[in-house]
Image (tube, rainbow, N blue to C red):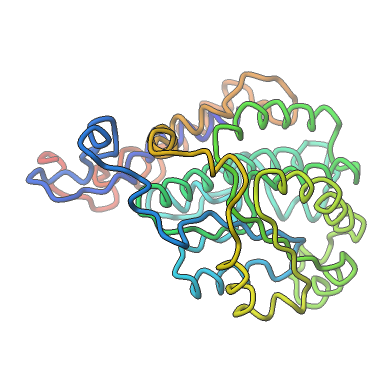
Length: 351
């Protein structure tokens, strides 16, 4: 359901991200994309790559300082920084960037999760699967940026670590086991289409310290998070995610005090050698096919658009259509960017 919801939302706005390059036509969208003929005429991804042409993810528990570290490293190394994808990621990258109500974000709410993680309406799992889809979209944007420009990208978390929160929810009895099975079905047929990060950084802060920090500096909703949930996140990172990601990515691990030394971590990154598959097995042909995939968000969305029934994420047809047309009636959301008279777009008849 949620893949399809995103798909129909992007049907209205997704193509607006295509830039209008040098041309005579005055349209705000021209459809200029990398494709078969660009490759045949000699455009090669590997020619764009330099020492910092990498995908780096920074993971850790809530309030562990991962965001601050990721941003500082990006500035230090001249890489693109992507903050953690939240439930409004699609809203930020489409239309005019206005944040829309929760009903247009998978019918889920992060605040409601903190308030009542065991809410019987299934909000916890709806939120988690929606965030997984958002992280998939963001990761495809990161790969697209790397392959198109050669500039490396540093992200807070990724779809490869997203399941840590799902497992923590299950251990905390926030969601049913059937939700885990549903999530894994979608993940197993989608995430393998992407290359994993070159380097995964893990900020190791004990759950007790994270809990204390949240109680001191977090907002009212975050302060209701349970210590046991934070501990389950930490345990899953260490027992499952780190051993698994080491099979395909180089891993660096730092304590709370060590992440303060950005200079040292940046130096460590410069000395890391990428020796593991699948990145070492790539060539211009495989980069070409990956680039075709990640630039087309409809194809990315279809990776996790599976007709699998589970009550937590199932919406009736009438309610679905109601939400869809309410979305299209929002200012600037009915047509592609540049074609919406209701927000002041002009000369539409010339486009």
